[in-house]
Image 1 (cartoon, helix red, strand yellow):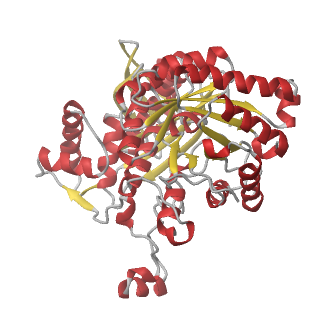
Image 2 (cartoon, helix red, strand yellow):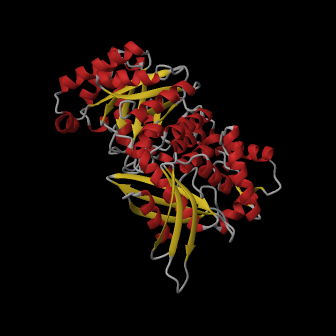
Image 3 (tube, helix red, strand yellow):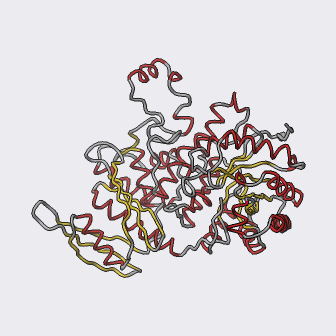
Length: 517
């Protein structure tokens, strides 16, 4: 096999949380939220941030532009289809980045050529060449992706990749767009590309794997074993359909099994868990407890045999430490007598970077909570930050509420809100206090969304625990998630519902015109 490894033989982490991850239902973010995630990715140490799809909407363009102007320690990539308009728009968005990259793509599979593009192989080949050449006029850093590569004719795929490199692509991406391949087959495909693309040594080989069969991480690792030195992935594995390859799983596999994989990444692994929690706080999409590396049970041991082994020597049942991914083993952190300095330090330890104004706002809420609870946990602080800092901009603002309920009384809720700057109040009855409150909010806002899911969780233990509510709303095909936390579960429900409505208003302003990978 050709020796294609570079002097700097490490795996580049191309994070597409803000593009592919944000495209999936319920993960929509506003500009401020995207910027906060981008800053966290910079702290995490990713090599490339795919900040968005600039042509998709004005909001996406503005977010990519802002990230490009702000983040300086990562390459910033803008996605573009293989046409002049997309490429020009992508460059307009990323041109002020310290290290801009244009990422252009077109399908190469017969299925896509016949049914989606309705073009011949020669036409697609020329479009790929033209796209890379146009991107190259703007920047030397050009990535080309052959969409649906794993279902493409191998010889045609190699022909397109070789042409893209000749045209100036410095990274070529071999995506498993629909999550169809399996590790042995994918590893063989990468070897085939290495052996049959004559100029492959002039480009970094990348992969972008989807998780439709639960094999995205395994396929990515198989590709690395066969010469790939860039992996496209997302925090918590979020993304289209079943998601993308999980950043944390790939990184910790390479770190933990460096003896076998013979390569590593430049990720600051101690920032993995705070980064994961930030994504959960912003999107409202919880990580399942048994999720590898960042799940609540990832370092929990209930079996007596396991506990006995751990007490004697941790390595008996832990192949990596919680601290290595940024999990803090302490539970009780602060109380009502804690000052702002200690609070700031703990917020920073949790991986959040707040402005002075945001910190003071959150600290005030912390003191209010500490007066009500005997113990304030990390999870409580994270919930406060999500509530005070990470919420979507308010079109609808909740002000006050009173409810009446009981075994005999008809449940009723009086809700006061600010809607488009005007204070308004109404009362509704329902099957219960939450139902009554939701009906009152719907009436006040004039919204027509459908409640798809309502989930209640306790953030910590004890009767004084904060309740965390997650709601999923749908309107005209758009699906959003809202979150709220409060010691009163009805209040938490209302905060979550209003948060979702605000996210829905933000989503209505976006119009994604293309879907990639």
